Image 1 (tube, rainbow, N blue to C red):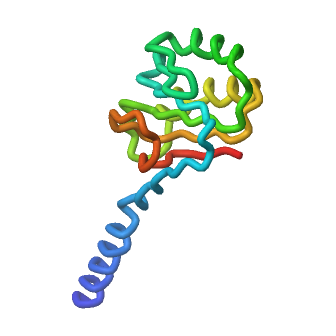
Image 2 (image 1 turned 180 degrees about the vertical axis):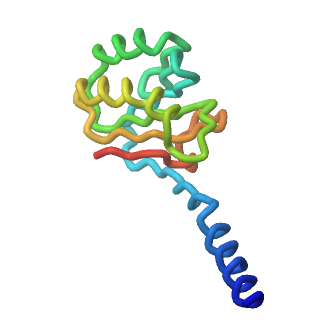
Length: 131
């Protein structure tokens, strides 16, 4: 009986350890050279990196300014200072307004990436992608 219980405990440990880590995030590769690229610095401020640079501003002001830019198909939002190991409350807090506003502006392909302090989105971990 002791051996069976030891075996089951070991098997349980292996199963739980296998489930403990999330799969690695996929690296992003842009295929749209005309994409809007925004670096979201926190829940309130951001800066536009491309196609026309806009320095650090309140996110609401930037969204207003985006209405004057020519319409594009793809928007890439780089979430700097994003700490969640898996998508959760913080992701929803930071992404919902971007998603809703960008869809309203006609963007069909919206990508959210985990930032690492760089301005090139290529190679950054992909958090979510909406077509």
